[in-house]
Length: 429
Image (cartoon, rainbow, N blue to C red; front, side, top):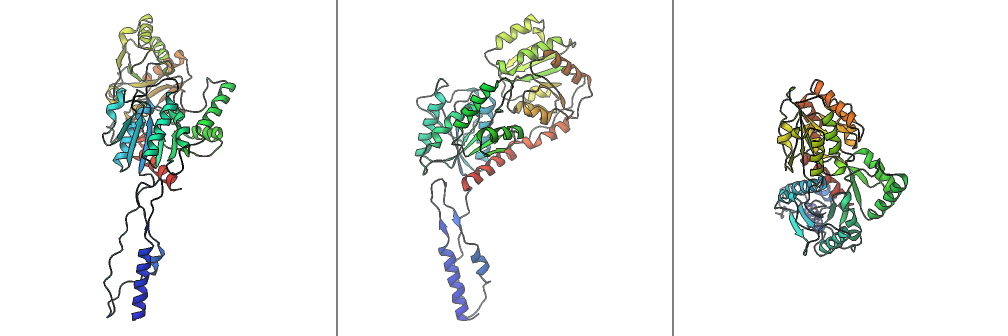
């Protein structure tokens, strides 16, 4: 190598060092080292010559994820699928190396204990309980907090929380985060007439006009969202229904006649239909266990008394984990009038338990119909529900291992990673 060549090589090296720069632009959680790749192609291998020099190594800071800081807005920690999934995702995102800040109206609710201490929790002071206009107030308060301490992206965990989106979307560009809104329930419902559905569509479009992305739970929901929002910003990501390393399912006992149902004791869950169907069964040794709590508990207990099955219908109350109950069950019963994508349905199949369900959610078409893992019937039909339960009792039990394998993609690690991949792409664009 000539002296001229060595000098040129050294200049190329210094030129590349000058082109390593740091980006402090708003929305980036840290410095991102950016290196011109063509330098590598121009840099020849070092050759020992009389003119060779000892140069310092090029130091490059690894590029951080585009969505390294994530905010979540949650009204409270009440019993609900939206709250449970939001907490589960927050915990997993922290485990996968992201900074997560959860802003809540109040810390009240039985699910508070499930939140990881690694998640930064900011409850409003004074507390903001649910009430008229409380979601809009929560949105304004969250916007003020994220303006003072910006994050890369804010995750809105479900339909109930959409009213916080407008306030976040109005933040100045310098501090405005990207906004990803979860669609936790289908946008079209059987019980809405055309006028009501039209009003709902317009309301949805107005609330989410400031969202940068929407996340659906199934393909039908994605199509509906694209049509209603008039903007193709919706992507499907599977429901993170299963925790780390779920237990292997226990074998099914053909003589077992225990039926487990779970959910808040409210009208939409259809537990009145479940009890009515149970009373029609010709199974004197069958038991119905309804896990959950809610305002209709006494009414449902009274119904069981009137139908003569009170001694075989149990109400254990809220449980933090359904798995021990599913392990003792012969089947899982979903009697709802309306559902999003119920995590407990996935949990039941992961436990290796067949399902009898109303067609209250698109999940039934994916996980029950045509799979041999149970049966489905129309909504609000206790006679059909009873016949389906009897049919599953009489049939050869499905293989628990096959049911578990069918829902393996709903594990929290993979699903949380899919969310983060979407968030990184959104923040980098």
